[in-house]
Amino acid sequence: MCQKRGIFKPMTAEQRQELKQRCGGSWKLVLKFLLAGEACFRREKSQAIAGPGHSIAVTSKGTVYSFGSNSSGQLGHGTTEEEWRPRQIRSLQGIRIVQAAAGAGRTMLISDAGKVYAFGKDSFGETEYGVQGSKLVTTPQLVESLKDIFVVQAAIGNFFTAVLSREGRVYTFSWGNDSKLGHQTEPNDVEPHPLLGALENVPVVQIAAGYCYLLALACQPNGMSVYSVGCGLGGKLGHGSRTDEKQPRLIEQFQLLNLQPMVVAAGAWHAAVVGQDGRVCTWGWGRYGCLGHGNEECESVPKVVEALSNVKAVHVATGDYTTFVVSKDGDVYSFGCGESASLGHSTATDGQGNRHANVLAPELVTSLKQVNERVVQISLTNSIYWNAHTFALTESGKLYAFGAGDKGQLGIELVANQTERGNPEQVDIDLR
Image (cartoon, rainbow, N blue to C red; front, top):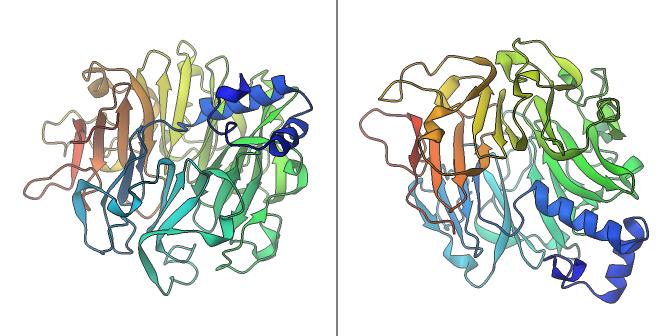
């Protein structure tokens, strides 16, 4: 069974044995690790990324399109001009891309050969913090420092970037001041550093980056678990306190809830998990109702969203005080901050009305129900500096967009003084 998995096929016999030992010594555990990785993010499947002001779409064949803001060359077309129409990144022809990540002014793409290509700003801090990169990279460039690591996922935070290797090891760039991620480096450090401590010998299947913290979903012989590291403000690390963690620490609450985490999402200031049984947990800053508990209170440990007790969830996405949940049936629920119409609950025909209404508990996104297709992925902007937009990808590869579109990030042409779309509109792109 392992032989059929995409990331296992190209491994040498020696690499396979190393993975077997890392997973606990049996091929059954290796298969569990591989399947868990495939389940929690769309590896080698079509995907759309709603980045801060710009967007990336990857077809199931590995072709990449980009659109939106391009002030740092983050669209990869060799220019710094905005694009509202999805445009293929031609310089990647012959390279199959299987994963993408978008941050403020930068983009990272991962090929089926585990190579990482990056473009946009060359610094890792927002312009409000840290030094702006002195040079712009406007076409995809191979990240040389990662050439000896077979990468399967990337996650871009505000002060750091993290990548995950096919063996389940996590590496981070930058933000090592005060050993915030278990190592001491300068802000502009571009060398990957392994995330050690409790995760040193634990295989990780998914990573998620928030504004100033990182979550890691790990696969162990006794089940799935979540570790967190970084800034603890608002309780978003999930340990019952608001203190920082300089080394990865196990979130123990899931054992108390008897919940097996299967998917993890890190918003700017709050986090969410979907369990194997379909339950959804949220924690961190509760501003605007983004935790879905009917209030705006913070939660310092994961708490089950009771309003979704009759929903079997399979996917969750988080942004800047916003949360989306996708059910097994393809229904979509959203809650949190209503700014820029990114929750999909706008009732005004022009998309301008009711856009500031916050939603304190999960609400069915009825506008997506009218699409009459099963939604398989939601992506939303995860940045505190940009108005948010949202993508909904259907089973047949159709892409729907709503929210802020002032930079062309929706992939839809806006007319007159329009800056957003309140209801989902299909993007002219086929992601099959």
